[in-house]
Image (tube, rainbow, N blue to C red):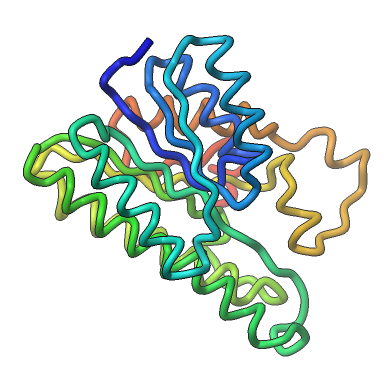
Length: 238
């Protein structure tokens, strides 16, 4: 069953992207799921289609690669009549001294967390402006609001996402395009393991789930908010 309203979610193979995809389908969107792990995407697509009846397609893509981003842009352009929402969720973290990891790893973080977000936001806006409708959610972080030693490049990248998204939202408002920066705090996802974060299991039980974070973010988007900081504790923090 197709709705004619398409949401595209990057980084959909786990965590917030996974949960946001499920909740968008429940809210009546068809989906294009994007991530490197195509097997995970197909499992999610099957689950979502079975539970909601929504049309769900997948696109395996490594968004650190310019050619792979162009592949996604082509997919967006071919669906421009139904494209209603892009969720730029794909991202990666890094914890430790700035000079410890290979420079290549740092540059890949910048490529994914900054360059890909900028390029995909740009291309999506170009599609939506003539129609004077649509929406864009860029996933930033509570780290956007402060300089974080030992998460230096990550926090700086997310500060860029927040600033870029706020300004873009002001520019696109006259075209009826809603733009929001989603700023999660510590959330139960694969982010910690990938970034090299070690945590205490007891304290981690009280951290917001990815499902709760996705729900709060989408609720704020529906309310027309420009910035969504999920969780009362995180709101107080920032």
